[in-house]
Length: 80
Image 1 (cartoon, helix red, strand yellow):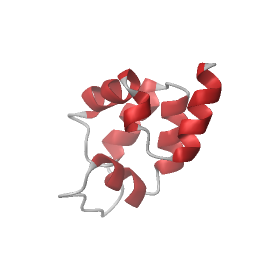
Image 2: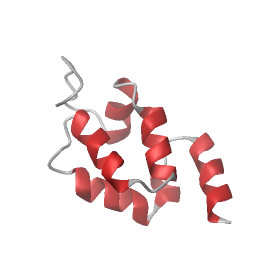
Image 3: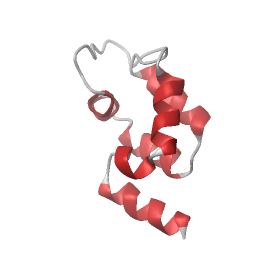
Image 4: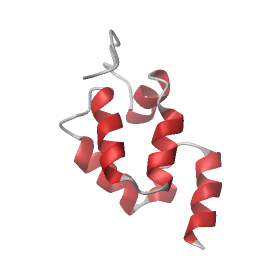
């Protein structure tokens, strides 16, 4: 169940999510700490086997892994 017809070979996780047009969904899931949705999105970009490990790493250190400045700002508001 990957994004139809897309070859993600050689791309980073962020590149895959961005090219697939899933960055807004990814940011929303990460900011709200919606792990199940993060895993689903990673599966759509060919990372099903690694999805749980990647999602857990992002959630454990969100500031390091968040993809956009907008998401950082929203995370800071939620964390207060």
